[in-house]
Length: 277
Ligand SMILES: [Ca+2]
Image (tube, rainbow, N blue to C red; front, side, top):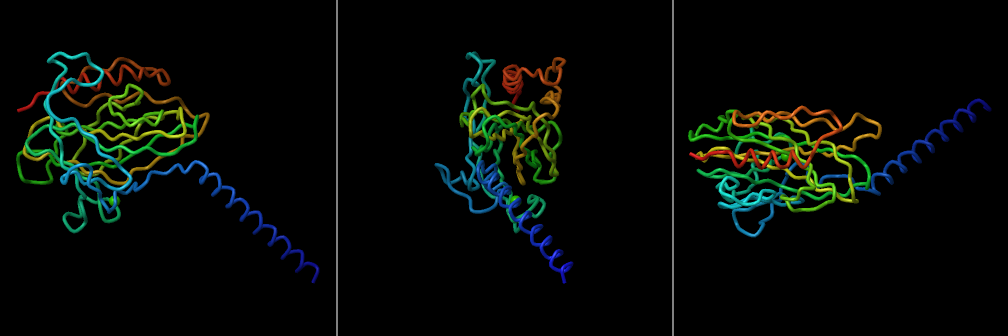
């Protein structure tokens, strides 16, 4: 009998310890609420200023429209490029299952017969001083053909950025951007650089640029994820090389010594050299 009581006493204490631990974990998570709202780009979508701008809840759209100076460069025709306001909408399972990686929808935007430079952003709550990175899956359709499986590697490029101050202006030089990576016809996961939060919010930017003014320039996003990077891990990685023929060769980079201002300048320099046809 005594042994039976002892066992049950131990079991009870184990349950209490586990429950307390779970409550502590949940409380810690609740403190910072480090989550992306609608990371799966599911319905509903909301109109943002105009009917063709249907944006997944939790996110906001940004885009460059027309011929204009690129932020960060002091004027001059070389710093100007033509783009157009895209249309945003939900890509749903019933229209094309290939466009949806999980759930019932993915985010889609497109420029018809124009180049494009646009994206989505979201400000998220984090713990000030902690280090974060995020990722998202992307695929594209780009070409004059109506074959929706076409997206060669010189058509659409993606860059992920984090504003460590929680700002929402895409031209801010505070944003830590990756260099451009080519998007393809099937879903691939793209990672941001790891960034230390300077405030209790950071802003996640997804930026997609279409190089050519082709009939179809569509991009699809699904399954974003925010990661908190443990302290004491390796320094922030060097950005990857820009995978396009006209891009300059990146300078040698030692991990942990990334010049983010230069990266930002590089991003705009690359866009300003793109042609339209
Ligand atoms: Ca989804």
